[in-house]
Image (cartoon, rainbow, N blue to C red; front, side, top):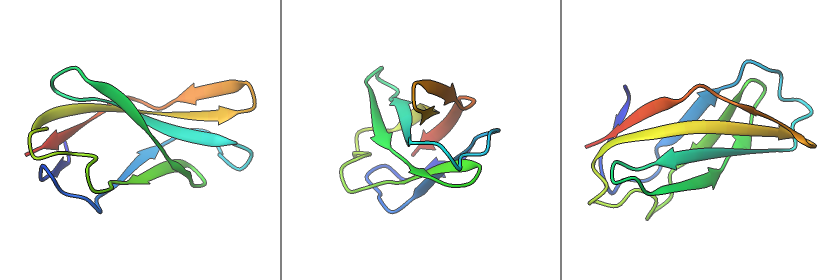
Length: 90
């Protein structure tokens, strides 16, 4: 499980997608914090992965613990989700 210091930014999250993303129209990474709070980030599309670079304020110094992440890619009205992964915020 990858880890990132609480309160940091500039860390890139990359999630692999089994499908070719050439014709995909959008991507998001959904997260669940250790306290159960949920949200999402708009991700950048690659050929077979989606990326998001953490911005200042995305992970606060109080957000320590294991986060659950899952990507979602959209092609028109169809969507595909990535496998769920964890991120350890220390």
